Image (cartoon, rainbow, N blue to C red; front, side):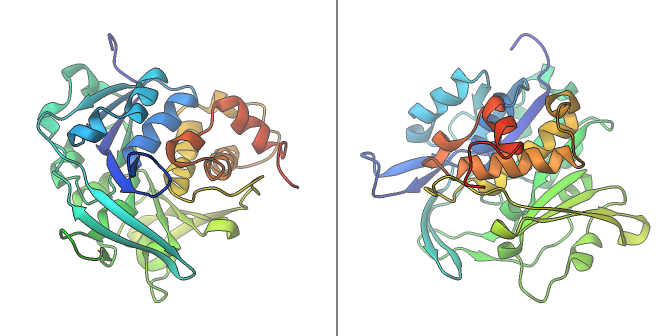
Length: 304
């Protein structure tokens, strides 16, 4: 990439073990979904990721590159491997292989000036030093759930309570799902962990979710609700949260993408469209292009 990208995506390319792929696995990870989604929505993207050799040489990484993303694989690194089991009460994960941390030293010099940063962990692979990397005036998004997983090889992944950290405090836009926190944790509890001016997207699947603006002292100063958009056919739930966050972030970075939307909260509506469409394909193959997302925003090409 000869110039600074619009967005730098940071995280890991994980491998999800599955039965319906000849390889026995499918590429995933918040960084993979975010990089592809942001590029297909019309932004120039650079991605720095940790990945093992199989992930690094995968057809999905080539698909991400074909979308225009400059993908930099951290040399000698490995990303996590997950076994995902979907249950009525949520996803159960195990990990045969944990992730290496993403090293800022692998970041190309020209990328440091990027105005947008998507911190997209899936396995707590983002060390605190990443809070110091984006410029002070950059817009930073964070997939919070990826910092809330505790991994050890061969055992079930468990969640930790949300906590503040330098990376969390740096985020301007932060996404987390209700299934990543316990029932006793309220939105107000989460808001107190964020910096004033940040916006938190608390997603709730088919129920949509709420966007909370954090004021002084960690109090919620404003809230917006969004509705989910129905899918035509449900295939794979993985990546929905990452795609939603990417859609919202893309619209905030580049409002012209949704200039034709006649209603309010165009950023949330684009996120909902991306989250709806990604469910209709296996893994990364469901990540939408901008045209399809705009059609879905308007209620086209869906059951309602």
